[in-house]
Amino acid sequence: MADTTTDQYDVVILGGGSGGYATALRGAQLGLSIALVEKDKVGGTCLHRGCVPTKALLHVGEIAGAPAEGSALGLDITLNSVDYSKVLGFKDKIIGRLYKGLQGLVKSAKVEYVEGYGKLTGTNTVTVETEGGTRTLTGKSVVLASGSFSKTLPGLELGGRIIDSEAALQLTDMPKNPIILGGGVIGVEFASVWKSLGAESVTIVEGLPHLVANEDESLSKALERAYKKRGIAFSLGVFFEKAEQTADGVKVTLADGTVYEGDYLLVAVGRGPNTKDLGYDEQGIEMDRGFVLADKQTLETNVPGVYAVGDIVPGLQLAHRGFAQGIFVAERIAGLNPAPIVESGIERITYCEPELGSVGLTEKQAKEQFGEEGVQSYEYNLGGNGKSQILNTTGFIKLVREKDGPIVGVHMIGTRVSELMGEALLMVNWEAYPEDVASLIHGHPSQHEAMGEAALALAGKPLHAHA
Picture 1 (tube, rainbow, N blue to C red):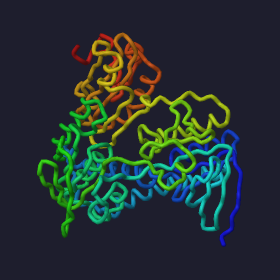
Picture 2 (picture 1 turned 135 degrees about the vertical axis):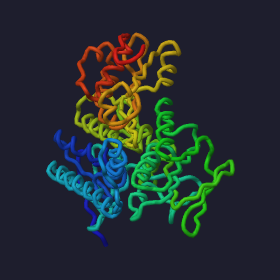
Picture 3 (picture 1 turned 90 degrees about the horizontal axis):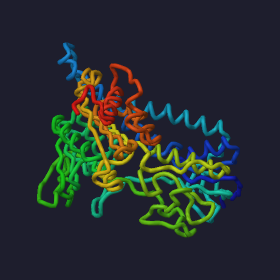
Picture 4 (picture 1 turned 120 degrees about the vertical axis):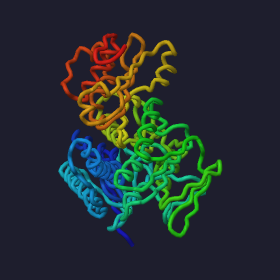
């Protein structure tokens, strides 16, 4: 019979992804005794099977596109071949370095890392099945941070040539003509990287009217134009009906009878909360379709002393959101009074080519909140920005303000615009007025100079832009 041990801590955390490990590190920093339970690897999906590996591949794709750009600049550069095994090796090396560093941080913080399958077995108890036996961890507070999984559609079974994003990252050969079901962040990022690395054709199937449909409509339309130019095909507004695996590929049929054939079907229809069979229901945690309904102001569940962070909490499923929530919860448990997290103030970045960045309200959301006549917006075209012309990128920066009030939304598209999001984040969260930003001196020539130009225009004094 396996040994059973019981340990007591200030905080027991179930899940070692971005939200869980942030809770652990900040809690330990504040003098709390911490147990962090993880059945796989600390760092979770983002580090090992999501954000980091996809961005590594996107970087390789960016370099692969350099020869085509070089010929227009007088450089005789050719891309002779893509050694996909070395591409995967680069991705794995990046993950390995970050994983090693994170392990060191957890160890140095004196967090008790418990490797094994954990389950909530009491309102303040987590039972873990480890290689050495069963451990019962009791915490004055418990934080649920069990993350998410790749969803599929009813009747669409993953396996073989029908894959999710995690399986796509493990393919040993580059897809030649993949079909992607879902035109959200995951779908458009994989479309971008596969096209850059030499796929003959890439097709996105999206049932909604636009790609990246949660973004400001102006960004969606601009990305669609850019993808047409890149030769990435997409079907919009017609829903998926079925998929059949053939001897060497997949046949996808839409509701209107349209048929697409490819070598793989990537199912990128979003991520679901990983809460099944973890004991949450049994302990009386209030749930909705698998999500944990934590209080928006405190992130505490309906069970006192039990908190939830990350993808299992309804809202944006972003690693940096879970990370911030983890810090917030640790500080609340330690008796501090951190400011509640405002969901609309979290920046959103899609690392395709061209990149998308946004924070705050879309123009539509702003009009719903302030009225049709209560909103002003301005789009500054990157065609007027010197550095963007050097980078050979089209796109724009769009500022949305409450009429005669602060900037409430920033939306942008173009090469490398993710690097401009720091200023956008501060503008929205510090409720800056266009006049405030217009008075700041932005470096020339730089892409972030375009942010200043957009603010100048919205403040009523456009210079490198038409009124």
